[in-house]
Length: 479
Image (tube, rainbow, N blue to C red; front, side, top):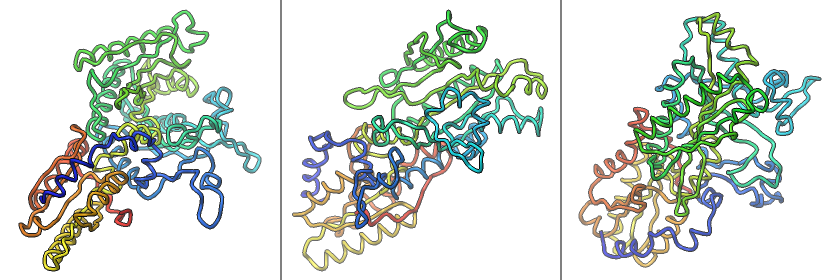
């Protein structure tokens, strides 16, 4: 690698400077072409994008669609491998469903309601009632052949009304997608189910997002009942609450024994329909607390839908527990948190622009011709591999400015430099982003070394789901 570029990176790479510290998650989302800022004026037409789209409805751009598609493919395959059944539910339903569940009475002010041909409909505020209906239909159709535990999974879009003043970028919205799962289990399977949920959280955070799940970075929070108010403020029987809370304590104790992760309990903080376990992550230089994953018991819906009676008929089971479960919660919120905490850096598989090839022109026609040939060859081979790649050209005098612009906005995980030395030696100078070290590391070699670098950056996802996830959208125009 020529000296000029090496010196350049000593000067440029730190990302914790004043300008970076002033950015929020929406700034990064715009730079990465993930989302459109609602306050951006629409050209020619007038008004802002938010005027037409509506407050709290994120407009994802091309890069955001790539991120979501890749994440969705990973999540669906991972859940199938873990024994979940993929389901898909409608965005509209008659309010009779929410009358049955009790949501219409307790949650109406947060629902979007419509009147269609004299019938009242609601835009879906949650996925769980539909998952219960699917479970019931399976029991009705297949009886004892339905496995218990029965686990459903959906990347489900929901809409909830929030006052305009509470909305904030991707962190607080009205339309969002949940990685929503529901587990229907008998008593004997409740503890293993909770422990599996934690292991899935650990897998996803570490292998997809490079978030360490250790005693230093996470804690577990148990939200429990006030025992004196069971039957009043907390619905369900004392036996259900005591058993569920005992299972949460046992799970937390086992996780602490295995990983050293501490937990704390908050009595009286449970939802009225059941206790829960949350995974709290401490990210960033300020160690800000974010609640992400959750496992929530529900004593309400099984009663409303008479699941115990149905399961007793089909399986002879006397007890049935329902657990809501999300690894990320709101996908939009998680993306916002992640962009803010990692200053716009995204894992290789999810980054809109994964690789950038930079040709450094010298002014020597023969050398520059060779550089151009190598740039095109590398870009072509990466496209054949279905890597999202672009290229650009610079000079020694402009290189610092050009690279700073790309590093400050698109942040491609892999940057390949081809200058005079590389052209003469037929090699590449590769810089890859190392999440563990929070910096770029250098590799010098040929195309086979570049392929090895990319394969290593995809390795955790391959270990998780048994395959690479590549979405070969051409985003070269972003540079």
